[in-house]
Length: 412
Ligand SMILES: [Zn+2]
Image (cartoon, rainbow, N blue to C red; front, side, top):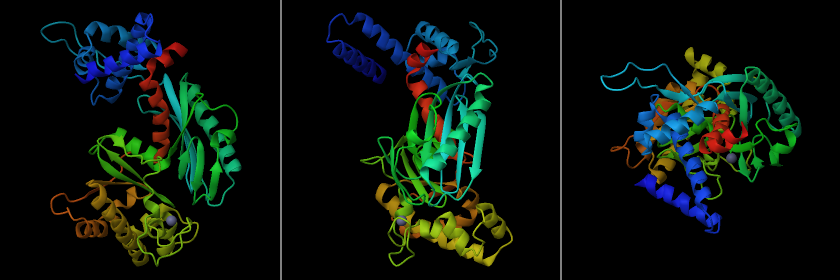
């Protein structure tokens, strides 16, 4: 039923766009585009590689249509065939379909507060090229940093395209508020009104630049990794703290796309000054710089140094993590009371600290969340891997191919 409704709405759109005159050819083409996308999405999101018959069942399309369009997707490098499964009693052996490795890729870029990086990913999720640099980027010059990022991107792309991969686009993850291709403000970088497309230097790999908040992109990588539910609050730990709200597999973006600034939720109005201009923000307790400072580690220490100090039971490190966990519990508890999400995913620099944060964090949540006796918060570490916003940024660019395969096929 849903499928029929959506095909009908596509038909109506096609007829309207054609003024209702001579719409037959337009309808056919629009249906083909719609069905190609439906099949591509089905293959890309299937938990196990589906056969053509499985795709027909899942989409409601005829086997003949699925076979014809799958052939187009295979020829365009989007879908690949696995070895045939053993035949059953009736019919031919089923051939599993999966995202094609290597042929189509996208570049993910990221500027965070203490590193910048580039990663090329293909449709199967394999990393084809990567280049990262660790650097304190607080108060940095955007032109200089983005030019360097462009160079890192070119390195990653060179590694990928040497193997024959074609790029579908570029995603760029940034730790701040974005609107219409402009980074309005990233308090920890000290950047305002920056237009990254103008500063990356040279043409954008794959032709299109998709900007996104780093926590949102990282949560996209988490969703794709798919180890938990499809509703969660994702926390991205770094010098700043970002968050993304995922409900039933969809992001809650907010009215302007600016939701998730959990790092600037106040946990103590009399607390330390934050770089945003306010006081007592969560990140002044649980951001990386705050954690390392309170743990008594040197200024050039890195998050692994804190993990090492915790491993030997260093009292200052334990006290710093406990204070961070209580601050996290205060902010996240308020959030859960408001929006009723049970799963909390600790990402980026929080991930390796999960078991150290857990006792105080869970204690705070069980005290502060009114519904805790019936739906206790589930705290878990992210499984999206190292620097997940790079993966999420590349995935955002790859999604354009999956959403509109016919445009990609026409360009090959
Ligand atoms: Zn703040």
